[in-house]
Every structure is written in structure tokens, then in C-alpha cells.
Length: 440
Image (cartoon, rainbow, N blue to C red; front, top):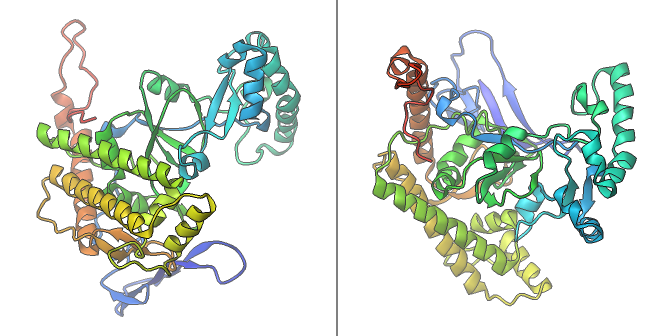
């Protein structure tokens, strides 16, 4: 009957908490949410109409992955050390790869991996030994660690974050989780979409698949700017914040809860599909060019994008704008304030058009998005202003997306769609595929 969605813990711990009051039985008084009277408070700590939870969709299954769990610091090398090993013996390049993590993705302007990693795939030990320079590093730094875990596991059953499974101590030269399904899925793609598992930016990006992707990245086996446009739209971001958990003040993006439940449009006209693809590519390229021009990563980019200080009337007291001006001076980049305003204002126009086009693809164009700066109540109390669609529009879109999810789930799990699966003429068996159009 009473809740505060997010507030800073008043003690020393750097955490955000929710406060909840529960009453057993019928409640006949006011419901108070964030100090405002509302009609109800749901289990998601909002006042939306109670319609149940989103369900996983077969059409989205098997397209998202967690990156590799290396499980051993000895696997990880500095860029300088990796290049030194390759120079010593060019064969070492077979087992040395750039190692991309969430920090590189969100904070490096070029999104380049800051470290490398040794990767013996699922090889046996004899094959790994044929690369002695790298094998000896793993033998010295990883084997003792893994063997110690083996003993600890016998005593305590669980070590650290991960339950220690049988192959890890014996096969200490390979990763804890190699993710073969992930690397098979992306092996033939020219680029693959990724997002940091935990961040406040909720920003998707593309990277080349010729690297090891860290466990703190969510990876999507897709190279389409159409898919990028849908996932980077405000509506998917709202969906993520509502149905994922948080870590401190950041979103912890969980593909099973967010991507696998998100209902894409059932059909999109070809001309609209082409527009979305082109606009998604333009959004991505313009964002990239601004990041390189200002030498900022995704986190600082979206801080500026959501900054109220960058409008027609410039607020030099705005913390993000003042920080950027000082930063540009420090790295000796000469960009005038009016140019900063122009760059980010133009990008906002692209973002507005993207949201409008996504809504059009659902045939919901009657919803008035009214983009502006609004408080998003699910964010921390001292950081809630975002350039966003109107709160009423956000609630309406989330409601319709949930209804669409339920419709899609019912159709996928009902006997009707199963009975009309096409038949393989050679085997006589039903072809296992989703009945919904494959948009991406």
C-alpha cells in the first residue's frame, strides 16, 4: 500500500534501496507511491494496470548469449604482452585474441579491447602444449588457482561466484564457460551486437566477432541495423528497465527477462523496414562520429544526450556540460559550446525520428510521443531527468507491448499454430520453425 521505488541508502553503503509497506487483507485507504496518491501499486512498484508478467517467446529464443567466463586471471594479458608473444612466434596469434569487456564498450571512444586473452578453446592438453609460450603462462598462473579451487570445492562445495564443476580443475587450460554456441552463432557474421550487462546507458553497439567477449557482455547473434534500431529505441529500453533487475543505480540487462520476452512487430511493410534499417545505421554512425570527435565513450555520450543544459538556452552550470567543457580543454580538443549544442540537438532529432518510426511499424502512430525532458520515476531519485517520450505515452506503449507479448505467447503455445506447421515432403515430419515472420 506504500512504496518508494528508489532511494539512496541513508547509511554508508553505496546502494539504492526500495521501501515497501505491505498490508494483509483488503486495503481501503490510499495507495502512496513515491509520496503520490495512486490507484494501485503493482509488484513492479508502479501504478500500471495489473496484466500479469511478460512470457518468453519462442521467436526470440536462441538469439542472445552471455560472453565467455574465463575463470582465471592468468588467461588475461596486456596488449603489450600479447604483441610481444606474437612477435616472438607468429603462431601464437592462433591462441591470442583481443578481450572485450563492458568497461571497454561503454568508456572507450573507439570501443577497442584494452586487454588480450589466451584461448585454447576446447583443445586437449597435448594440443595446447604445442603453443609453449602461452601454455607455460597458463600452467604457471592458472593451474595452481584451479587446483586450489578443487580442494576448496571438496571442502566447501562452492567457490566464489561459481559452483565449481568437475571439468574445471582437470582441464585448467580451458575456460570455465567456453560458450561454443555463441561463437558458432556469430562465426559468419561481419559484426555482432553487444550490450554491457550492467550499466545505466542501456546502449547497444556492434563489434567484430574476431575476439573473445567477456561474461559481462550480452551478445546478440545479429548484424542488422533494423534489430539495432528496435533494441536502441526508447520502448525497448523502457521494457528493459521494467522487467530487469538493477545493481546499485544501474540496469542489469537480462536477455531471458527482456530480449526473449520483447514482442517485435509481427509484420513490417518493406518500405518501413528499409526506413528503419537506414535510420538505425544513421543513428549508429552519427553517434560513433560524435564519440570519436569528442573522444568520449557511450556513458559520457548519453550523459550529454540527456543533459538539459544542452538546448537552445545553454546552461553552463549543468554538471554534464561543464564536465565536458573541462574535459575537452584537458585533452586539447577545441570545440565551441554552440557546436556542442548543435551536435547533440541534431542527434536528438534522429532519436525522435527513430522512436516515431518504431511506433509506426507497430501501427500505433496515434500515440503522441511528445519527446522532451521528463522525470523517469524508476531511476535513482537524484538522477531521474531524461530526454524521453511523455510519461503517458510510455505507459501506453508498455501496456500494448505486454498485451502483444501475451497474444504472441498464446499463439506460439496453442495447438492451432502447431497444427499448421509445414511438412517436409521427404521425411513427412513437421518443420520446426516459428510461424511468425522472421524480421531480422
